[in-house]
Length: 110
Length: 113
Image 1: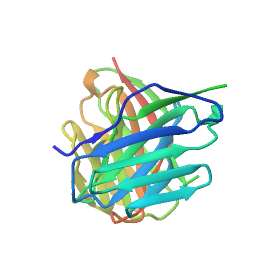
Image 2: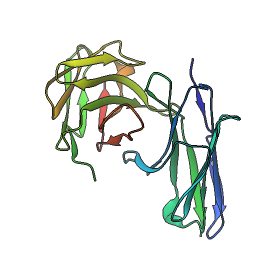
Image 3: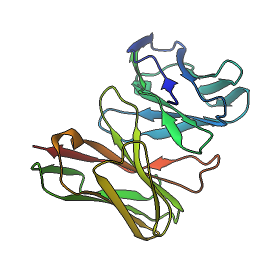
């Protein structure tokens, strides 16, 4: 059974601080990794994708991938109340299907 | 936003009745997916399509069927709805199954009483 694990949270972070979200996966053949944001009652929205080991930055967001340790993380700098949402990690497995984590609920405290 | 719509957006139905959910895209993407999302679970793939009339089962396909007669439309049918199929259903599209991202429709909240 291929798995993607995330801490369900909630993760509470003060406004302006760095929020760090983590995800581990079981399929060593995975090649593509995605972070989605989902507001309550809304659909998932893609915020970052990463395919190679290392860091990828996009504005306040940084995705980090370590294939040897099978984890991917998302850092959100200068956290804003509008960042409060559930963050979903998705991993494309060796059969080209997306396997989803259950999500981490992030709360940014003003 | 990707041009994806789902209908209906909300539906309440009784156990044993058939239900069809529709996903419509204007992006001309080849791949379309149906997921369900339940509390405590990640998104779970029900069925997907890799072209007109080409579909395959996902992780939780029992009790569901799909059809795709046109590139833009992907239908999900619950032949005889059960309470365990109460969920939020999302349609997604992608250009390929390679590194391409998936983009989601607004979702359909289905309640089976």
